Amino acid sequence: MTLQSSASAVAPAEALETGRREIPKRRPVKNSWGRLPVWLRRGLLLVGLIGLWKAYIEFKHVNPLLVSDPWVVAKELYHGWASGDLVDPTLTTMKVLATGMTIGILLATFFVVFASWTKVGDDLLTLLTAMLNPLPAIAVLPLAMLWFGLNTNALLFVIANAVTWPIAINVAMGFKTVNPAIVSVGRNIGLSRLRLVLEVLAPAALPYAITGIKTAWAFGWRTLIAAELVFGVAGDKGGLGFYINDARLYLDTPKIFVGLVTIAVIGIAFDLIFTLLERRTVIRWGMKANV
Amino acid sequence: MLTPMTSATLPYASEARASNGALLKVDRVQIGYWGTRGYVAAVDDVSFEVQGREKVIVIGQSGSGKSTLLKTVGGYLQPTSGTVSINGTLSLTPGPDRAFVFQEFDQLFPWRTVLDNVAYPLRRNGWSRSDAKDRAREFLELTRLTHAIDRYPHELSGGMKQRVAIARALALEPLILLMDEPFGALDALTRARLQRELRAILDRTHTTLLFVTHSIDEALILGDRIVILRGAPSRLDEVIDVRGIGGPESPEYAAMRIRLRRLLAVEEDEEEDDDDFAVFS
Image (cartoon, rainbow over all chains, first blue to last red; front, side, top):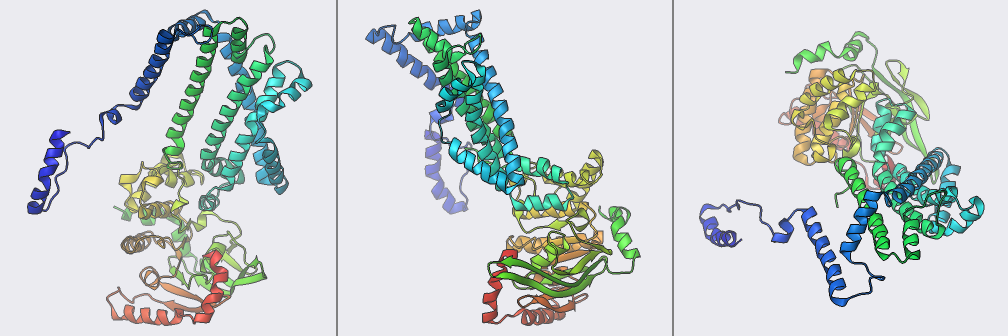
């Protein structure tokens, strides 16, 4: 740093003589923190936060029934995954979510196709999304329990309701805002109606579709955990929400933390997958800005 | 590097030469649209013909309905009355025999590389994967884009994007190439260079061209004949043969330029009406 700045202090006089500016040998870097790779920066921050947590436990002597020691949580987390105690609830939750998402995506596709074919369908979709999208999905849980009883179907109903509308809204918007020039080109090169939809409209609407599925997954995930908390056991197995509530019942505070950490980690993992997917597709193609 | 391809691989051009009738016939065409004040004719009673290998420029003020006319030839619009036919067949829907190059830079598929943007339409028109790629490479070489073959459209400059669109259109071996102010959004230097390049490429490939512009110089550089549209609704004012007038330095060119400027000059009060048709240009 010092070398560079002294070199640039000499440059103006030199520049007057030669008419050229000296180009620094290395790309100038603002500070050393910004020079570290992203994963290291975030990792260090995480370690720092966990350190604060640990310090709080050590120096304030908090009741371990209220806040667990991070070390105990880590051990419990390891045991939970090693023994399979955590694997089952996680798989149960993921399975319900995956099924709910699939139903939601199919429903959304149906609505969007119907909406792009007919004006009635378009109006219907607009009305439905306007009514149902602002409704917190968990609010229909009591109704779902009445209709379906205390079983997985009630959960699926709630999840499907949570994910269908954000996907439908976004994909419909994507179809509507497709650049007319490439549709004209598609027709010019002689594409059939089906190919025009599959090979021009669909990829052109991909940025919106990914955003829709990303939003839908986040909605569905939150809704499902909340529903499980209320619900307890779905069928013969409980999910992660049940796991946490169960731990509370037995005052097993470390397990509550373990459940929360697991939920957060899965959330982060899915966000990462979507980010990677976007980087490989719409960002690479310049259809979405890299933020 | 380009000569072997031209005569051997362009059957449409040779077909056009064989048949003596006009390749494109625009016959007493009226085109209009329904606006807030009811039906409005944008183009009225326009007739002209384009022979095979001929380069015809349609010129007019912005809003003169020249783009509307081109879209009708392309099959995107249907005339209210009259007919548009290519080799005796009515132009009812868009198709690759009337390859279209638009003014918009974003006419390329952003999710396809430059090579795929040119190869994909070929594949959809019966070419095998490898043949389509080979042919795409050939035409990208013709438009001097070999170095950018693996890039995505957003990594190209405006001029390069238009060259890809031109390569894509030419690779389809169209009976007639339709271009709607393809250089209109480019800076003056790039535009001049692309005009010269296009002229050279069309001469080599013997492509028949129908080109819409409001630039007199562009018309004189590219065209064999110039069709002038004027008025509201616009009618065919005159068709001028500009073959053999020489380059921009020649006195004939300068004289023709002045003549066209006079022909295209519009009175102030006429210009206001033109805004009605701005939607088409």
